[in-house]
Image 1 (tube, one colour):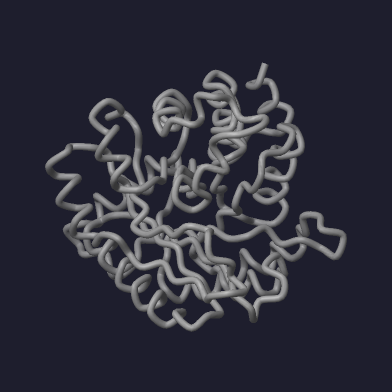
Image 2 (image 1 turned 180 degrees about the horizontal axis):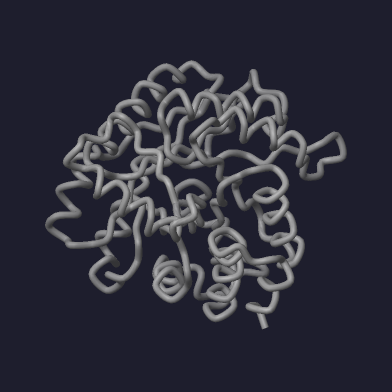
Length: 300
């Protein structure tokens, strides 16, 4: 497979970049991102309560899943990786550089999520810890008073990641009082274009919905084209029935041209064995060319 290496990847880091991209995508350019950043983003709402297995309340549950399942990268905060990484050295990590809680409503205050650490901190940590760190991630919110600061940080993070041969994944969400419908396909396409302009390797975005509130495959085509050479990852969203999730994932990739997924709750809100099977099914569709029927067999 031919890999598009960004021009800001130095010559002496091209092989490192290619190695990270190849291993993270199973040589397909499709990324299965296991999202584990919700401990901050959603506080404990995603990890404790009705319908959620008790073991999910511990951060280690996600590390156990990531170490046993097929995934492209496990994206979570630096602190969690530093606490659990030595016990789970086989996991391919993506370090989430920023996060914010959901305590302040978006219609009350424009969101701002500043980077906690630098790419340089991650590079130094990778050298000393010997952990398999494939890249870094950063969330930015469009449409608010702090948009310019987050755009500047995102641009710097992508560039610094590439200079060190790391992948750069951006979570881009329009939020705030001026955003009427965050699942509007045309708006999401705009966010995808911003990610492309920032040079991201992959962009994690909201799923476009039609007027009935259902997945809009045609709108997602606009989104994936607007992203250019940056790969679109649709967010996994709240936990749903397995077949419905896998059918939509297949359509996102094979009908609309997305290049992966960023899934958290639909994996970790299950007991360990079930979570591993679900992750493997998602990976099969995303990175192994499996049909929905073939993926469902992995859940048995």
